[in-house]
Image (cartoon, rainbow, N blue to C red; front, top):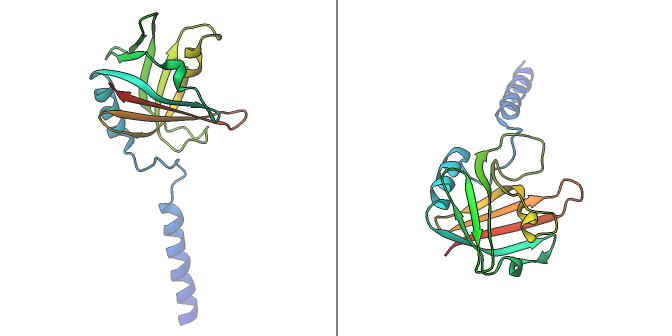
Length: 157
């Protein structure tokens, strides 16, 4: 009888363990609601630059040298250099979808309406937020087709 009771108790405890597990993506320890709020506040404060952009293992940071990025609270982003000025859209939001291989539940979306031949087309994506501080935003994108990884890091100027 005691043997059966032990099996029942082990079974019940195992059930609790399964129920306690989540199917949600690992969010790198970020509280998605807090991260969205923090990032929204941080990026609209000051000018930013791309300190690192690696496209499928190839460092393309120099493509954005000399550009200053300004994010406004109305969702407009501008990128300006001495030679040109581009505008686009940005947003940051919690992403609870299970349709990607993301390690983050926070997406930072950029869209510059530029031709495919322009370097800024590479930035058009819904990037996964990896880490952030008041002066740095580290993003990653995993290509749906090939699985190659792009990384993008903004730092405050």
